[in-house]
Length: 108
Image 1 (cartoon, rainbow, N blue to C red):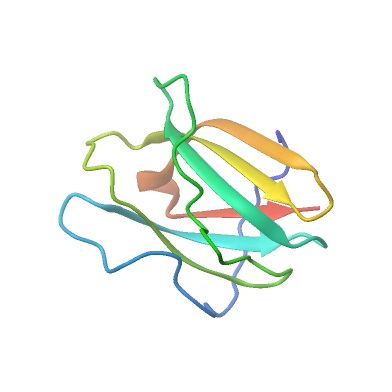
Image 2 (image 1 turned 90 degrees about the vertical axis):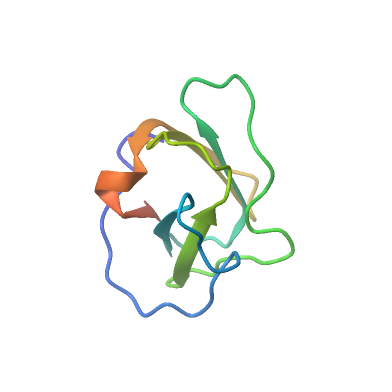
């Protein structure tokens, strides 16, 4: 992805996961691109495989976003990110500190 992550300020329209617990990592995910985000994966940066699709049956339309909760119980903040869009485009970003960043935005 490199160069596709930018900050955005939008009103949250829905949440992707249940309410966070003490060990859960909560951050905002925004889609400021022109395509619908259909799948969203994260993985601890030291892992060699992606976790489950955090959107499940949901999608994130252009201009929308909301809270994402990672409930893996890990103490890491460094995650790799994979977004899959309706047009088939896959964007990856590596070593993102989601604790410090607090939000992640896909953009054109």
